[in-house]
Image (tube, rainbow, N blue to C red; front, side, top):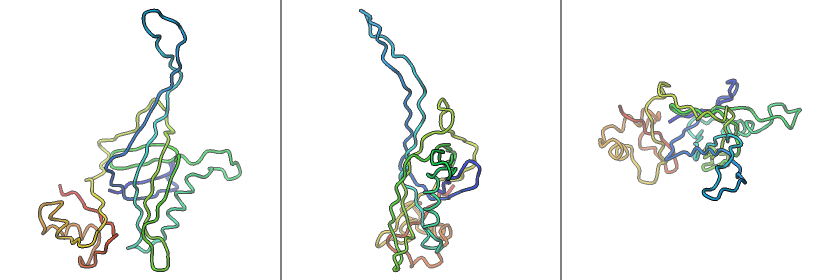
Length: 209
């Protein structure tokens, strides 16, 4: 299903495909040991501060093979989200961003990122990338990441890499139990000729309601 990484002011908006088996949100509050001695039971720890939530995502897909768009422009935008907002002040923070997927939103800064390029043209131009991201919450640390059940994110879909021997009718039979529904997958992915599937191609499998 499509996800979006965008600056909070909406100046930059980067769509990507996200089909997680899981994603991890981690949060830890901070305490210090209480040194009071008690003969009967250990003392309660002293609360010091709320920790910020962190979010780790693996893997976001970016694919420009079919569209012939410039993948480098997209990945450069991602790197820009880790640069200072004010280029004249190297100590300024990077831009605050919002990661959105279906009903889930996380307002944060990008903490670390890795980009793995997995497909290239014969000229060596990258056309597919897998991106792993870690975010740290920028909002009030007492607030839990936002889940909006009324966001209208739409039905969740799968992302599937094509392997040798795959056919749309076989995929439709596997995911829907009906091989005749291959046309739904073809239309969703703008595939005109189903015989042109190639190993390494990534397609989206929409959910049928």
